[in-house]
Amino acid sequence: MKKINRREFIQSGTGIAATFTMGSGIGPLLSNCSGEKVSSKIIGIQIGAPSFVDEGVEECLDILQERAYVNTLFAMVYSYKEGLSGRVWPPVDHGRQFESSKFHGGYYAKVHPEYYRNTLFNDNPQILRAPDDGDFELLGSVIPSAKKRGIKTIAWLADQVHNDIPQFQQMAEMDYSGGKLNQVCLNNPHFQSFLNAMVEDCVNSYEIDGLMWRSERWGALTNLLYGWDGEGKPEIPCFCPYCQKKAKESGINFDRVREGYQTLIKFVADARAGKRPAEGYYIVFWRILMRYPEILSWEMFWYESLKETLRTVYTKAKSIKPNLMVGSAIPHSVSFNPFYRAFVDLHELSKYNDFLKFIFYNVEAGPRACNYVDDLFGTYLNDFSKESRLSFLYGVMGFREGSYDKIKAEGMSPDYVNKETETWLEAAGGTNLKILPGIDIDVSAGNDKLPRSREGVRDAVLAAFSAGAPGIVLSRMYSEMMLDHLSGVGDAIRQL
Picture 1: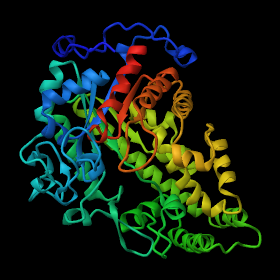
Picture 2: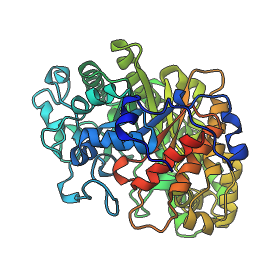
Picture 3: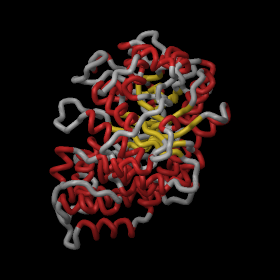
């Protein structure tokens, strides 16, 4: 492969506008791409402050352009999750390595106090500032250099909290028994004030090109069936006074919701213990839902609250900068959880999203699908073998991969990326919504034995564009990607 001269590359803008000849051997995979200019596509990458601190802003941008023709940064501005805004665990071949004891997280841009006067942080908004990288200020430090290169910057915010910050405890969700959970309640007015303030601060204070909100969680039904630890402490959100009041106003009988979930908890506990009902797990599960339709009403109530949150982010950002590109990140569970998939109505979401980043991490998809087969489907589909449950998943989701053992050991193929991208592009038909597949580059690699390679990344990128995607988001974070694997993106672009 001919090496691209760094300075010539930079002077050309992002480099992606250059004309490439189509490579051989990729056949029908590229059939849907013919006649399209690659330069019109979004080549995004998720990246956090530590990468720029460790490698230098200019040096880091050089790497992203030379190896992957990146033209859009999804900059992690607000997060308390070390996998998103910290340094990665070994092995990687660039930047510093993971130091869990030093990670805190928070807001990686400058906090402007005037925006937080009507929030719980009015007395001390600087408590939100991430202390991990000293005085480094992500957006202010990176945007000027990115703009000179023609690279856009989309600020990325996540609805996470730090348990040691007392203000967040006043926003916490509550489970059905009244205990506080480790996430903010979407209906809590203190959270809503904080959310508006943070969006206003970010959009007003920086010349960002877009904003992405991440809310990677789900409702009570999924939390019970999938997320329960089996010790009688299901984290079923959210039964706080604000949710109870709002639910009552919408006509939901809260006492019936509580009674229904107590019945469902016993069902899940018995299923986990292998205590099969005489009529079978599936029949009894649906009997409970038919007897307590409030369970599904409560599930939809939670998702409607999530939609309102997405609408709040969109409305606030657009009120400040109408031309800003505003969107959301859709979690990987959309490929494995039928309850969450049913929630994702793109014609509805298109009313308050310009784009949606979908997580289609094909290598990581194998083990994750197996987790859903074991846990979520290991309750109401517990009458069936693991292979039968997996076949059910394939049937309802519309893609088909290997056996349980195969995908757990090897992940899924690029065809999974292609099929899911096609599905959601079709679902978005008739809207202006951009569907951006998230491409797996060493997601949570750690010391696992899943096959990860430059060629695999290349094929996943080609699969997304073959389906007709208007862009991609290289994921999960630049800090955990092997540089040679990142170069697989550049290989794909040159073939296109």
